[in-house]
Amino acid sequence: MKTSNDLQRLLQTIDHKSYPAYKDTRGSYDFRTYTLNIDHVQGDPFASPSKLSVAVDGKIAGFPPVLFDCPHKRIALQDYLLRLFSQKISQYNFKAKGSGKSGLISVSHCGQEILERTACEIDPSTGKVLVRFEAGFPANGRTINASQLIRILFDFLPDCVNSTLFYAKLNPGKVQSVIFLAEDQQFIREQLPLMGLTAFVADGSILPRESGVSARPMKSGIAFVSPESLKVTLTLPHRG
Image 1 (cartoon, rainbow, N blue to C red):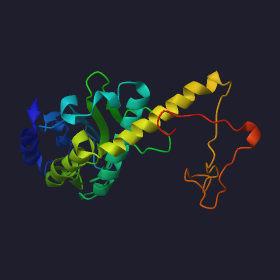
Image 2: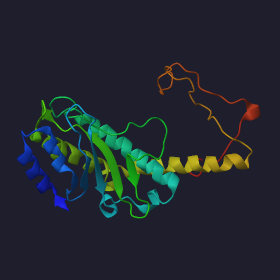
Image 3: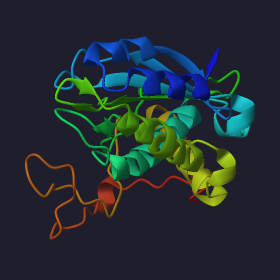
Image 4: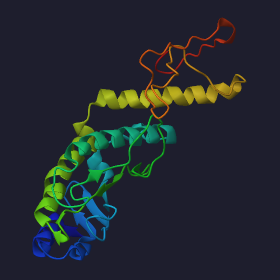
């Protein structure tokens, strides 16, 4: 596998060349603590951004297997890491300059739902973490601006990866709370059919949204309270 130094030398070589020379960067590069994969390079700075991914070996990522040893916990952890990575990477969006989509750096946006997403995957057998994202390779007009891509790949991206995809860098209490919530949710899902129920609404839920195109709760919304005749109580593994 090529190294990060190989990538940096290549970028310096193609600097100020015609934009299609960026195609030569496709491949995998060893950044010591993670592997950077340049999977697809956009045709010009105004086209859809380039597709990249970061892979962190399970032993280096260091997430205890108990955090992803069953699907509902693994999906919850993936969702949490993706949200952290998204928050961090958004700080660098368009910090690198150029024409068209130059400097764009983003990852799939998460809504309220906790779902299986291809943007972040954890291998249940090894603990390997894979995150897929997009980046607009910088250019001046249609001329390569390699110095700005070097900023993205060697300054911005390492900060995002190192602060979000390694268990040692995270708050273990917050990670544990994510898993506890997932276990409580799974417990409820398993109990509903046994009780002859298909769904539930928790007391205190704010059901109205702030608008028809928003998932945020209405600020002045009245909290839901179940009628006594339909109220059911469950004792959850963690919340009680």
